Length: 419
Ligand SMILES: *Cc1c(COP(=O)(O)O)cnc(C)c1O
Image 1 (cartoon, rainbow, N blue to C red):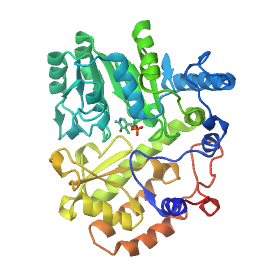
Image 2 (image 1 turned 45 degrees about the vertical axis):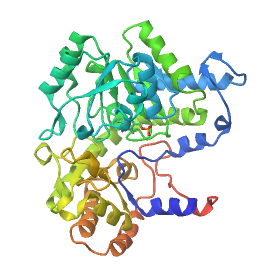
Image 3 (image 1 turned 180 degrees about the vertical axis):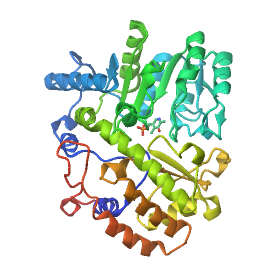
């Protein structure tokens, strides 16, 4: 099955907006002895012996993170984005506190919902209003919510992300209220670090969390970077992560993250720029073929993500499943006006171009991708037949780019052990 899975992705056009490919050097570090070890606490203050070089690695990865995000503080221990978020919630709130969050319609992540980590911490989340025309938070409404709720912590950042959050417009409001301002950059960390999209730490944000495997193409791990307002806040953040929400921090992934950060320092700007170009090109190409791509008037997107309304073509469930049969991997997604109860058959699709960019696709390749999608979703051609063409097209995109050892082929699946 593991072989089959690898073969599937070798043949597919992968467009899940939260996924990416590990570079060859980062992948090597994932299977070193680091994987077998434990390290709890901070470099120089460990609970176990054997951590001499782990400490040096951790300090190095911290330095790379601070450099890439121009931050005073970095914690590279969280084992996922959600884990990083839980660390911040543990550090900066107490049960019963108010927190303001992007809403479900805005494409919020489960960790900021009542039924996710925010609820687990016993917090009361209050949602900002969403402006469907702009596909962004409603500016006046959000300012009003911050001023009225006076939250201990104000969270920004979503999982469906077309345009930068207007943080500068909110800045006066959260400075007046004195909230800690937290930006969840899980999806857009690689764009931010590449100098695209926005720069939250320069726009009034104190703490930024992220997954390190979406547009930042590292190992599945998490990270916090921050400019804490004082030493007390910094200490709270440190203890929020450990002992707050983890013990060991997956040392192989932490080391691989160091490689990904070093690579992004060198290649990130070019990579981020091409991602955004590709998503705009894909938006335009789909639109020209009759797809209802959201935010057409605003150029479809400023990020790696596109959202497409496919209700008239059979709905999100039909489209996503038919595309999967044609080796095109996307996810169905709620649109802002969908009822939450229709999550299993929503009106939309969410597409991401970060992985296509990573394997070397450029704007003109987006025409081919759009055409394959049209044949399946609009023309209702036999997906199996389209799939054969997709497989042939994918033959030319088997190497990883924007990394050291650029051009290394990604999968040698014939040699894999199987499960
Ligand atoms: C993906 C995501 C996360 C964290 O995901 P993990 O799978 O735990 O790394 C957190 N917040 C947002 C907005 C996300 O999209």
